[in-house]
Length: 119
Image (cartoon, rainbow, N blue to C red):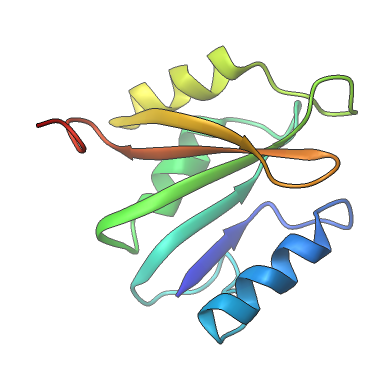
């Protein structure tokens, strides 16, 4: 199950459709109160406190689950500096591992629990 936070009319609908097709279910909204495997956060400059949203996303997240923070790419309205994402992740007890392009206007940063992936 993928739970979505920060949905608005500016999100990448093609990405949302692809995720729903991959998981075979609609994305759960912020009010979902069951266990989730992935938290998908759409975040723009001025949306409030990113740390609070990450912590909210962690509450129903299954152990080993992943948080993705989607932000507008540089030069787009609402762009968020990567340092802001990293700082919010650190405060929430997570670590930003990678950032990828997920569409024309959005980039996604993967957050995982600290220490994961180390050998």
